[in-house]
Structure formats: structure tokens, C-alpha cells
Length: 508
Image (cartoon, rainbow, N blue to C red):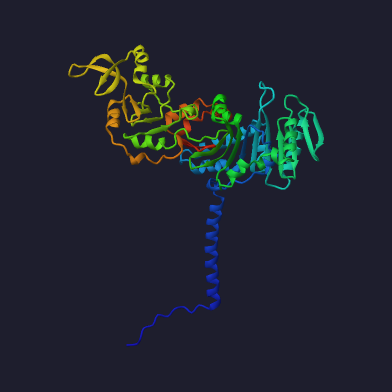
């Protein structure tokens, strides 16, 4: 039998080389396309490292609040589209575009017609309280350019349009730079161009001159601020950088000025990062106090080790900071309300599986149960003792199936070790008092934790709804933003000289 051999085509070496080249080229194109998509994905802005902004040299250190945005504003709609569900992509992109446009409109700028074709990836805004408290704060806006002539052409169009509208302009020189300002008392804007790369726009000429003065002295500008530099040296990631003084802390966090002064909160530095469909604020607040002993210290760990029932939300707080991180209970009921009326914020407040049920802990005699008898009696609840528990209740006038009158419970209290526990759920309170110490499931909070709060959708909307900063943001957005809110988690940690704040806000 003749041997059978498979005859393969005899390709020339030249043809094989061409085929190999085409294969490599196609693979390179595929890899290049994948690389390009990854590099240009709007999701990349989540992982960008923050750096010292060029505008920091021109923003005065005495500014009450400064915000540095380090992303291309053109990317915001694409980011909203990328993180939204399929049904919400169009609306998410439109909402972010409108919010961006309206933020610039506050300073009299039209983003689409004046900024979109040249504005770079750094934008900064500083607010300075006016010497007259009845007037709006002064502001300085810094705009970076991504094109060689973009900033200069913007200023030409900016002032040409306002001149054609009948405004009188004043051109002068200050510290070797050309300044253009408006003589209109209703809109006394002023601008300066820095090296064709940075536009400074201020609410009035004096504020702009102050910014240029600050750029000449390191001790006066934010680029040399040791707190800000220390923050950036920690390789922080995000899309925005924050800095504020005591006045700014009060406005930004919605804190009473008296509390800020009492706690000697001096300066906040922090960053905002995008986390999927949410925002994360991480900040450090320096204080003028140097405490030898921390308000809670290891007591946070002690409280968590004592806590037995499962819970949905938790707050561990320090009475001196009770206004700093409020706890929102949808329906606190008479006992918790009166407990807080005694001037005692619970060291621990856990919201149980049922949103209206809570468990709280206070020091043993702060207050004593007897101090609540009279106010609860006025509310219609009388005290009684049941198995070593102090219980406040009243009869409802209705009977159950066995003919027994139903009771309405205001709450109950019992002590264990050095703590007094309170609840509007008898089973949860008894379970807590009978539990053994050493609950490891809740021991993740330790050391210097002063407060931890976890809020669901409804409490989050209620809390932010009363926050002036959030109210202003909704006005800027020209739409209600609360329906888009999800859960909120935030915590506060303390050492001898600083407070660390971390908050995560999720959107639905």
C-alpha cells in the first residue's frame, strides 16, 4: 500500500510574513482600542490622584471656604450615564449637565457658550465673608485652559459681550498684570490672565487684588498651607479638594458657630471622591485644643462589646459634639424625646430591625429613671417596676382576644455594670440586659471613634433636607435632589489635636 501523505500548500515565505504582519496589526489594533477605551472611560475619574492646584497660589489663605475641582467638567454627563441604570442613563446625564451649567451660571457664566470649548481640568472657587455681614460674600473663581489661546479668547469675548451690552470697562495694571474690571456697581466683576493658562475672575476688583497680593507671599496663599500640603502628601484620590476656616466649617457642615468656637475647630482640609453612584467625603479638622484624654477613647469599644441585639443603624457619640453628628430617629417616641430633653445625648443609640424601635445607653445615673417620671406622667405614661425594669406605659382602653386591656409602652430602662440601657422594645431591652459581654460582631469600631452613624433612605432625606448647604444645592440644580438620595454613613474619629470625618452618600 502506498503511503498516504497530506500535502499542505507551500506558502512562500513572503506571503507568510505578510499574513503574520496582518495578524499582529489586527491584534495591536484590538489591544490599542481596548487601551484607548480604558484610558478615556469616564469611570477613570474615580481613581485620579489629587495634586496641588495651580490656582492655590492665588487663593488667599484667609478664604472661608475653597473648593478645587480637578476634573474636566465635560466628563460629568458621561460619568452620570456610565453609573446609572439603563432606564436612568439619559436623566442622570441631563441632571449632571444642568447642575454643572447652573453652578457656573451663579458667577454669570454660560458654560455651553463661554467655557465648554476651552475650560481645562482645574477649576477653583474661594468664598470670603464680606466686611458688611448684610452683603453677599466675595468670591474668586480660577479657570484653567486646556488650549494655548483658550483663556485669552474667552476674556476677549467675555468683556466684548458686556461692553456691547452697555457696560463701562476699566483697564489697568496691578503687580505687572493687566486687570479689566467693570464699573457697573451691580456687577463689579474683575479679571486677570496668568500666563495664558489661568483666568482669575472675582466678584469685585478689591477681591482680585487681594488674590494677587497673596500670590506674592507664601504665608498668605493656600499653595503653602502646611495642612493642605500634608493632606495631599497622603496620596489622596478624588475629584475635588476642600479647605475651610472656622466660618467655612460652620457653613459647610451646618454646625452652630457657638459649637465651632467651643470645640476650637480651626481648619478643615479634605477631598471628595466619586464612588459608583455615590460621593465620599474624607476630611481632617484641626482644633486648637490639645486633649490629654479623649472624650471616649476605648469606651467606644466597651459600648460595642456590651451591645447584644442586631441593629440596622448605630451611633456612638460624644456629648460635647452632640450637634456635630445628629442621629435621626423617624419616630423617637416620648421616652427618647424626654431623655434628650434632660440634656443627655445617649452615648450609644442603635436603631433595631424595626425602624421605630431603638436601644440607647447612657452613664448609670445620667439621668436617673426617676427624673423622667414627672414629664412622662404629663404625657400620659405612668411608671411601674417589672422584673427590675422601670417601665412607663398607659392602658389603651382596648382589649385583646383574652379580654386583657392592651397597654401602650413609652419605654423602659434597666442598668447593667456602669451603663443604663433604655428602649421602647421590652424584649430588646431584656435581651440586652441578659446578654454576656464580648460581642465580637460589633467590635470593628475601636480606639478613637467618637461617633458612627448609619442612616437609611428616609432619615437621610430628613437630615439633609434641613441642611442649608443641601438646600442651596437644590436651588442651583433647579430641581429637587432628595428623591435621588439613598443611604448615608458617616463617622468621626478624634486624636489629641484633630478630628477625622468620613461620610459616604449613596444615590438611588
